[in-house]
Image (cartoon, rainbow, N blue to C red; front, side):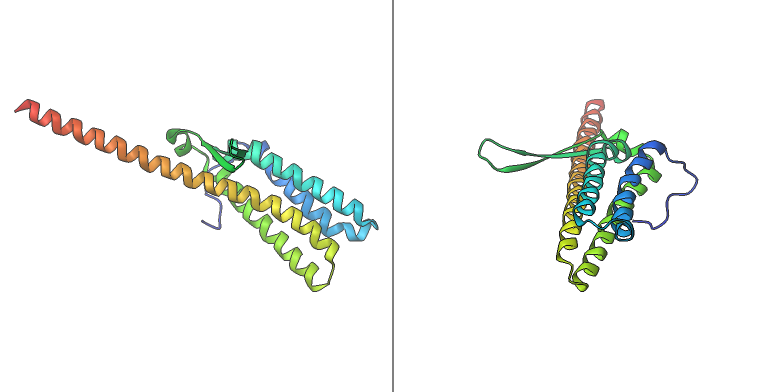
Length: 183
């Protein structure tokens, strides 16, 4: 992954990009700054987790679909086992996805998880078990989206390879057939 956003391209969906970032930033900022303004741990916990849950929902249901063309969910099958489900746009649509939107989606997702890990380390160092709980919930929500979308992206790449292989083999066989029918 490149550290810098793709040059010469604007965001295709600036409003979606804004909401993709705003709930992440709000949860992190509230958690970090709440110690200065709020005396109640319950309020800090509820507001931070609520903002993080809103971020989880926006990423999973809105920005993931629009910015990177991926969607995931988890179901229980008839045997009671958890089954991951993945959807992605067709290959032509995925190829047309805006690179800057995609870059923002992946980098902010990973960076948010890293910041929650850093906050968790600080809470451990300061022996603040209650704040480790807040960080843990927010980190789990963040990592759940990362894992879901990463699995979905790998599934999309696998589908692309299968499509390319099938398409290449059918073209090759039709070329061979046409070569022999001419003779």
